[in-house]
Length: 579
Ligand code: ARG
View (tube, rainbow, N blue to C red):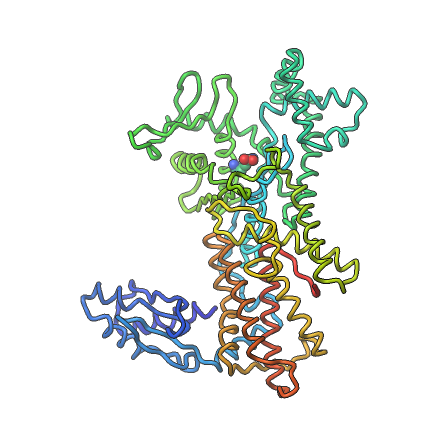
C-alpha cells in the first residue's frame, strides 16, 4: 500500500466514524503548494455541501476521528475546510528504509491482475518504418513496461499492415528481380526504393500492372507460389522492423506480430454477422454500416464501409475481426491502441460498432490513446531537407552519432568501449525521452539540441544524475549493500526528496491507468532536481560529517539512484554506471 492509499483509507475511516455517509470520499491528493502539508484531503467541502452543513465543522469532525498516530507530525484545517497532513520525519525515514535495495521500490504486484492487450508500433510492411511509427512504438512500449511492472498480464500485438492491393505490385516486382538473379535480401535491402521501383513499373507498364492485379487475386485465393513470394517479402520487411526495435530498445519481437493477414478468414464472417443483425446495408454495391451514434451536426449517421463493391474488405473490417479475437480469444479486460490522432474517427467507429454488434463483452475497456504529430523546426510535419519521409533507421543512427560527438567532448576520460556504450544509451535515450516527456496528445517539435542537452528535463540529465550517485558511492568506497540500513531525516531537503521517492508507485499506477508516460518523466525530473538540491544542502563525504549522517544520506541517495534506474527502465531508457 502506498502513502496515498494508506491516507485515503485512514481519512475514509475517520469520515465513517464521524457519521458522514460513505459516498463522500476523502478526495486525497499530494499537496500542490509548499506550506499546505504533504497531502491534502478535500472531501469535507463536498460532504458539507450535500449535508447542508459548515465545511470547517465537517473537517473538524473528521479530524476528531482521524488516527494518524506515528504517521503524521501535524494535521490541520486550512481555508474553507481543507485537511492538511504533514507526515512525520521519523515515519518517512522508516518507510524509506523499507525500500532500501528494493528494485521494485516497495511496489507490490496488483491484487487482481488484468489481461491487457496493447496494439502498438504496427507499421505497414510494404514500406520502411518512418518517423510516423516512432511515437507509437516508444509510447506503447513504455505502457507495456509499466503495466507488466504492476503485475498485469500484457499481450503485445504488432498489428502490421501485411495485406492489401499494394502487395500484388510488390510481389510482381520481387518476382522480376529474383528472375534477374537478385537475392531477395539484396533486392529488399532498401524497402523505400524497392517500393518506388515497383510503383514506377506499375505506372509505366500495362502488362506489369495487370500481372500485379492478378497476383492480388491469386494471393487472396491462396495460390502457393504467390503466397511464398509474399511470405518472403514479409519476412525480410519484418527483419528491418526488428532491427529498429533492437536499436530503440523496444520489447517487441517476432512472436508479437499478428498482422492484418491473420484475420483474412474472419472477414466474411464479420460482414455476414453484421448483415444478419441488420446493421450492414447495401449502399451503391458496397456493404455499409451507418452509425447514428456518431452522427454529424446535421444528423447524418457516420458511414463505415466494411466491404467494397468488388468484394474487397477494408481497414475497419480487419480491426473489427482483430477486436473480436482480442476480446473473445485473448480474453482481454482492456485493449489499448497507440495510434496517431488522425485515426481517431476510425477507432471510434470500430469501438462503437463492436459494442453495438455485441462483438465484445460490456465489461471490456476499449481505449484509443492518440498522439500528435512529430514536427520539424519549421513547425511542419518532420521531413528530410528534400521533403521526403525520414527513415527511422537513419534518424536513430544520427542520434547516436550526435551523442558520440558530445561524449567525446564532455567525457574525454572514458575508455573507447565506454564511449560507445554511453553514446548509444544517451542518443537513443534522448530521442525517446523527448517524445515521452511531452503530453502525448499534442504535436511536438523535434529538436536535436534540446533533447541532447545535459540540463533541463532530458534523458541525458537524468542519466547523468544517476551516474553522479554511482560515482558518489565509488568515491566513498562503499558498496550500497554495505550500508547498515538506517535513515534519519533531519534537513528539509532530505524530507522533500524522500517523500518524492516514496511516491514512485503512485506515479506508476497513474501512468498505467491514464496511459500518459510524461507523468513519469516529470516525476523523474523532480527526483533528479530534488536530489541535486539535497546534494548541495546536505554534505555527504565532507570530513566533518559523522558516519551515521553519512550513511543515512548515502541511504537516501541509494533509493534515489534505484528510482531513477527503475523509472527510466520503465520508459525503455538505459542507464550506465559512468558518464
Ligand atoms: N498499420 C497502420 C498504419 O501504419 C496502423 C495500425 C494500427 N493498429 C490498428 N489496429 N489499426 O497506419
